[in-house]
Length: 198
Image (cartoon, one colour):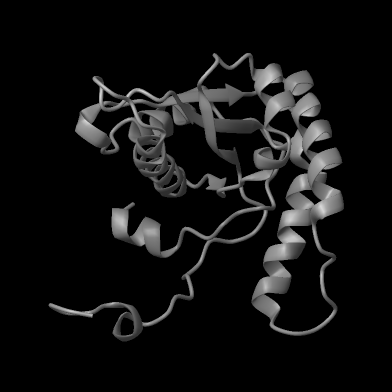
């Protein structure tokens, strides 16, 4: 699939089937993630790929307990777009243990080598996560960015046995989508692009 076509149809997939994902495809999208740019080509990323059902259940239980009480209920009316997103977030959290692959995009504070700064961690990890998501879309897999871990990072770190100093930037649930990919709705370029000056 053309990279731009993948980007333009890469909807956040929060409804995922429990069917397993072949390791060959998983390695392919992880390889694409490592092709991302990073500060000084530091490549300061690690991907904790959770497929074991008991590990997924432990993670899901911790996240549900920490996140569900903080999530607003799905509104009955109003703008349908936020309503769909919130309904999807509830569904994803409730079924997280059934998602076949959970990928934690993590990294240490390593750049610049002489005086590492935490501010450079997202500059490496977000491009890698975005590459992973676009690559997944290109082979028909569904994903979404989540930050559920932010409400329970310590117990998640313990479950994953993360080294001290490693930060979790994003959790990407990955699987075969239950819903369809399609064109994204975005603001027109005329509203967001400024030529030569703001």
